[in-house]
Length: 412
Image (tube, rainbow, N blue to C red; front, side, top):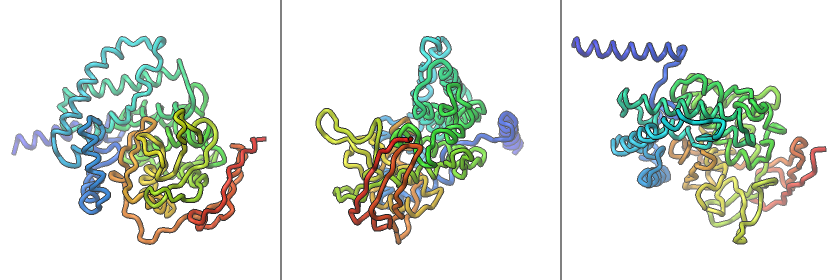
């Protein structure tokens, strides 16, 4: 009893120290993007729904092929130490390998060293397997993650690039911050004013400057679809789990933009449903600019879809995976309807250094029995210089084959 009491007291002291170091925020694990209660919900999902059971088999296959995040997820779902130990050894091995390289790094010569690494995936894998590490084993992993993120932050002062890619750096660094309770990394991800301008800054600055007409990413909507929307959702989940900060409800006073409005913008660009033989029909997205409709050198069409893409290659961006999280948080029936067009719910969000994976397995909710398509308003968007016109603006638009046209006008 005395020994047990001493152990409990020691644990309490450690918790108090951890809380004090983080100014009242207790860093818990697993808690970065999902906590134990949500892990239990995943287990029930697998038990109760065929689509979830099938996704779990795909998750295990991915883990067995070496995917770090999916190994960690399999560990917390199954309790099988084989998955967790494999992820743990990967993290320790990489930490030991890369720490000396970071410590001797000449950042002026290599300002982007490690900048395009998906640090959020590493942080989430560490968060999920945290309790398998001894304190001695945690130290090099946490040191590696901290020093790498510090170099990402400092490197941005030396060499910058496009806003969509820069936000990828911000959300990945912030995810590490939320995992470790590192306030500098969290602050940079959320509030960095942007050394090279606010459109290259943190979440709040990006919302103020990069979302045009309240809906669309300022470079071109397809950019954010590939690189940024999933990052905003991951950031929102991490903030909510860490200290209750609700990025989902945030609306910029300058642009009127929010995470929800950015997602809704993609629905405003949807063409009517097409009977492609994939799921319950494919919905093509109106695109323009770099990355828009084009042909590969092979002569095959490159096109973007909101759901059920015709190109089934890995890494093709669609909004369907992000909608799984958005529906959980916003309960918008339009999202449920779009999700239902793919009964397998198997979108794997891995593009643009995403940290999400099989979103339906992790966040997917039961859909209502009655599903109704959304309204289909036309719109003129002067900040982007285009109009999207629909001959039918009712919910019937999506199945009627109504005419729709993207008209490029110019901002002036």
